[in-house]
Length: 265
Length: 297
Image (cartoon, rainbow over all chains, first blue to last red; front, side, top):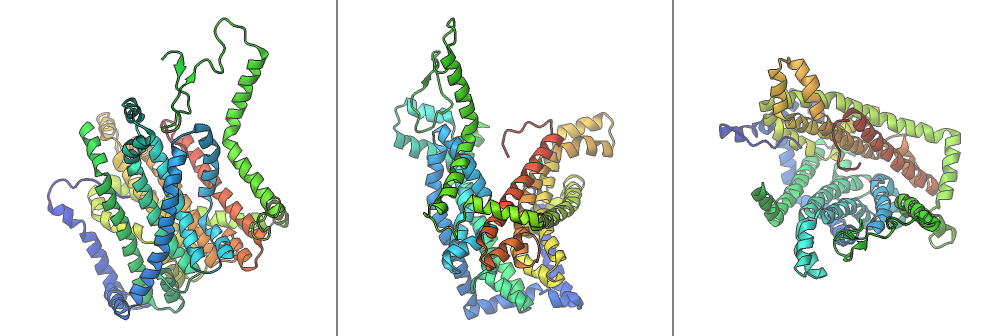
């Protein structure tokens, strides 16, 4: 997304481009003051901030956020716990088995999660389970596929050289394959987390009575614009921080991978 | 090593022995017997069908389980029921109508996003790279906004109608297309540009002959991403606020407990999505013939 060009030239440029965000915020703040439609429909940042602070004080913020996070977290963690081992099994080995199973997995992973949502509700009722199941489904596939890709992408030379030194299966797995595939796995985890959070909001908007998604939908129905904007801003910020968190984790745990590649190049 | 070949099935963990190269091949100088011809042909067909075994197995299981009562057939209808339902709806003309409506909405939003995103991407990436850098954090931020949380906003602005749906699809596709176009344009090897300029090309030629083809692979990736995302959002939008379309079909079926119709809608959505994706892949292969693709769709 976007360009990741290194800022060349004057160091002030690096900070200057944050100016665009500031500019956007200024426009956002001033636009509703112009009155009319803009005023009815847009809540300026100052109001949004005030609403958020009120939320925080009343404890509502914590409540809804906690519920949302619990749902997304539970689904995501379970998905990771199942898909990573499965990815190892599927990526590690027997080619004919892979060729049989992969098309099925590919098809299942393609199924639109929204069309499955009513099914989950029918199976599990309108409760936590259906939402967690939904999150599980949605995060399962990216993690599985990335793990499989990571496994396959492990440099065969490394594997063979380890084997030639007499490494057994366990050593091979933990010392060679796992580290080699961890960048891909982390990338999958990051994508899965982002998707999980995204779908969570959707699921909460369609059928829930608490949570951040519900907050957005409810605000819309009751035409409470500040609340709507506050919830949207909060959701976006949370999404960004989840992404950022995983990015940091990725860099810390797989930084060696990039460094080693840099040395070669 | 010459009489041993590493079979294609060398797995990282499981395969430890190489397969003797003589398997499946006749030794030179010997006449090939009928049996081994048959074996080779059989293996070849078996090889081709291998990809399908899994899906066939899945279908068979799916057909058997409800029919034999292992799974409640009311909640998990077998493919035969779903197909029957499908035929019924097609004959009534309902299913094609819904498919058309959904497809129309998706393509409209996608086309609009393309019409805006690609030129904008080129302008930002090629002509005003400083402006692109300036806007980068803002664009990244906007692109991160959960399209879902914007949906109520759009509904409030435009009411529950076609415009709100169009807007959300447009918004969802715009960002992938814009970002991939920008990175595509910026990723074009500057040597090519300098070469073209040194041969005296003017701006238009450089654009048409160097920049545009160079950015095309990246643009197509964005298109595919955008299309997938758009279709996803469309179904959701139709579930919440529409009276036609496949998303509405899903929602309506679930509310009225018409399970076979629900499954039918879900399957149709999946197939439609796959077709959309595949069409884009084919389009890309036609237009970007010169690029060697080493990844499958």
